[in-house]
Amino acid sequence: MNTLKRMDPRRPFTVTAQGLKRITLGATGVAGAMEFNVPLAAHGEQPKPRRTTAVPQRVLLVAAHADRGALDDHARQTLAGAALIADANTEVVLLVFGEFTHDAAALGADKLIVLPMFERRTFAPLDELNALAACVAAYAPAHVFLPDNATGDGDLGRRYAAAANASVATHVVEIDAAHVAVYIRANTALAARPLPDVVLLAPDAVEAKLPFSGAGERVVWRFDGDAVASKSAVRDLGVDEIDAAQLALEEADFIVSAGNGVSDVPAFERLAATLGAAIGASRVAVDDGKFTRDKQIGATGKTVEASVYIAFGISGAVQHLQGIKDCRHVIAVNLDASAPIAKRANLTVIADARETIAALNEAVAAARSARGTGAALLNSTAVAEGVLA
Ligand SMILES: Cc1cc2nc3c(=O)[nH]c(=O)nc-3n(C[C@H](O)[C@H](O)[C@H](O)COP(=O)(O)OP(=O)(O)OC[C@H]3O[C@@H](n4cnc5c(N)ncnc54)[C@H](O)[C@@H]3O)c2cc1C
View 1 (cartoon, rainbow, N blue to C red):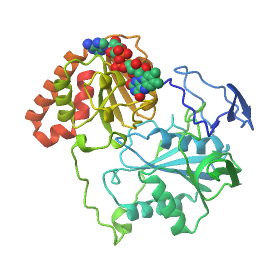
View 2: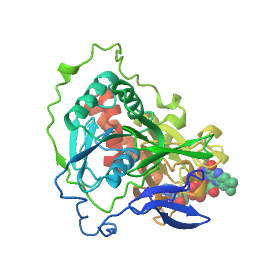
View 3: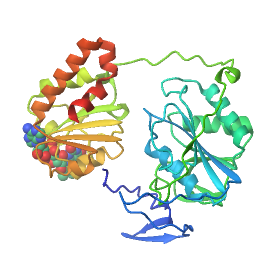
View 4: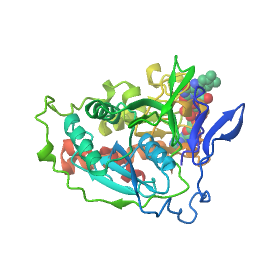
């Protein structure tokens, strides 16, 4: 579990169930507390109470793309933001573009609509716009919320606001039931306005952890894709696979990284090529001349945002962790269970790096010969997770 504290020095507050949590000179205080008649459930304790069981009279709609069946942190924060400002008579409807296999109730949604045909590799902005507009027409939400990201949702929100002639606030960093605020003047001042029709929320403005759950009812929504399919001016030419080694580390979605605990560098590089992953390294590994300086990840190296980051033989010094704070799944392979990286990692494998790398190389090679090269490459993350599990 990620226990690393992150703080953007320019944004010393987040929206939580208790209101705005402000951080002043190391102390935390609460301003403008929101009212919830539910106790804060501790981690892993009894199920959380339902936010509301009242008959809904009003809807807040949250729309977001899923990535491999799940919502990322930013999308979950956006959903939590809507759930936190919903009153007892308001239901939160979640519209997911792409497959979604997670528990929507736990994320605060009362209703869930999944449109699996819009998977992330497909570029269909106008069809997605039509789908969102159809959902708005069906539910007449008071407000529509999307994560303001560069991976589809931010664009969709802007397109929708323009098409519907709706009021919109982008890069929203502060929100409650009455207002939103955004930074102005190079982030030195906040500008506020009443809640607009469309809210595009900045990352880390809201804490995704909720003290309650939603109803989580899955709705089979008869969205007739063909009927609304646009005579699109946009043609999807598909996704071009490129060699991960050519990719800037900052853009890589899958990174294998080597530290002082990696002795067999050629085997490690072979694994990266086999998995289709970009290569990263700790400063010690770079200082030792095992990797070039541009591979260094951390405070004095690159900051990366991979979905999967596998750290082989890296202790997890604070300077290294700084560079991987935005990675989604961190897997550590280390002989030392008490290494700091284990606190940051979602999964820690207590094992020798050389043996694990060899086992992964074998497993991927076996999968490749069994399924054919392309399939093996596409499934390499799953194979890696399978071997490590
Ligand atoms: C100002 C400053 C800036 C810095 N900037 C950066 C930066 O940008 N990036 C960065 O990475 N560091 C940076 N550092 C250095 C940082 O403090 C650490 O020294 C460095 O990250 C340690 O690298 P490491 O984890 O690879 O090596 P070590 O600290 O030596 O750790 C090696 C790890 O590998 C494990 N291990 C050993 N053998 C094996 C094996 N056979 N199999 C599996 N595991 C094994 C060990 O248990 C240990 O946890 C900076 C330091 C300073 C002072």
